[in-house]
Image (tube, rainbow, N blue to C red; front, side, top):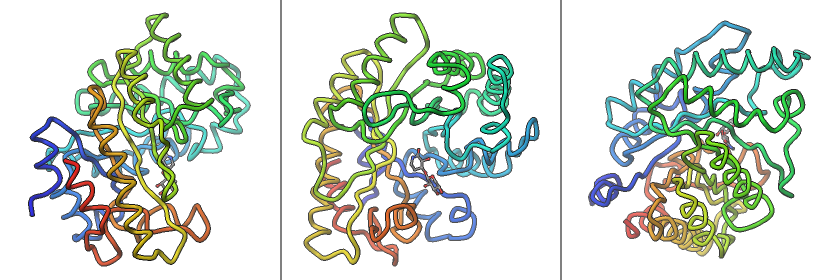
Length: 314
Ligand code: XIL
């Protein structure tokens, strides 16, 4: 059967996967699937602050460069991930007790170096990641505490300078349906647009629980698209209480299908990226105790019912 990327390409759609650096390098079955099935990708960790600038002013692009080589060799649209995030942030930033102006210049230097290095080669940057909490209030990151809510607009402007051709996005989890947190993004993006701040898209991570695709997913995608920005599903996985039964795997296939259909139904929803390829390398078992099997391929690299559902949607 023909790969997902062929069907996606025919309709100008992007089907992506998060690619882990060690798997790309050491697991040829993983790398083959990544290349064959996906026309877009995201570096799972390789462009995060702790990897690219582990100590102040000391940049290490070895992982990021290797990822870029792979993506470009395989004609994949690249989602840069991520410039400003409270997590996987080195302690020299988080605990540096910097003044507002110092932290702004640290942020600017980081964005200049990372986004600047790949300027012209990145389709979308997740400029700021996970800035709100579930109730729609601001997360107390070092950026928010030191700079205030303007750190987002500042980061977007800095990214626009560093890479004028990239689309600049915000990205978060639990904003897939209409709720207090996605309302906060809706309001913020309206404000940013009104102020002329460069903002091009919103990424719905969609780290989902089996059987719990929000019923308002399509409506939520539509309301962001109606603001004139792009939308994507950026980190899709559907986690199951382990061990996964056949009926749970069928449910998971339905969930994947529902997410694909919701995105495909809205002009302006440009693609769906899954957060990994094979279940055994997923971040889910490390993060959610007792849960797993969230992806399209099982531990033996065999396509699951979820794969067939994604294929059928395209
Ligand atoms: C995860 C990676 O998959 C793991 O390998 C890493 O240990 C932690 O981060 N939201 C995001 C992603 O934006 O960057 C996270 O990726 C998953 C949640």
